[in-house]
Image 1 (cartoon, helix red, strand yellow):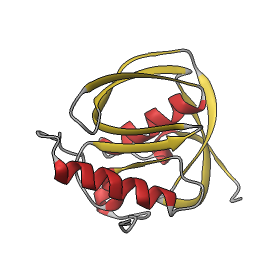
Image 2 (cartoon, helix red, strand yellow):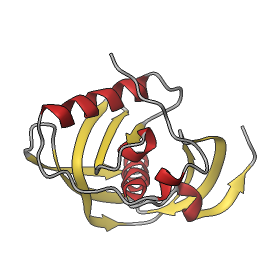
Image 3 (cartoon, rainbow, N blue to C red):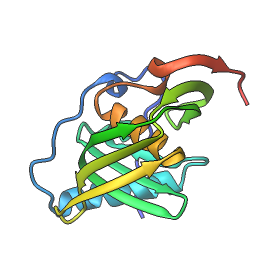
Image 4 (cartoon, helix red, strand yellow):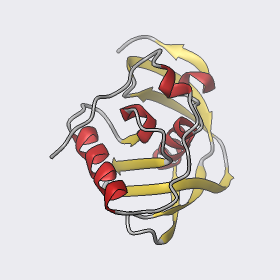
Length: 152
């Protein structure tokens, strides 16, 4: 098991756009495994983008509600509906905001073996997909806030 250091708050890497992965190989699979280990070692986490561990690659891991995904170069291909969400982020401990997100999204990505996959997410999973894909573009959930909530 290998964990990576999380990046927090004003770390400039959180505002940088991640680069596409050109080849899914053992090095990428190891990084995805490290990201998943890091997620599991961090309280209250559902997902993690690579720049949150200091790596500017388009990689996301999700372990939420019995769904475990390792996504390479994920992109949203459709969205529908609207929902109001409460969001937090591992890189911004104890900060929570209300956001407006799509109710349903469809994501296209490669899996850890370089195979194309299409994944649908509704409600909380849709929020999770949106949050993590925005990380890959250097956006953070605070950019989407419609209201800051009290620290819990």
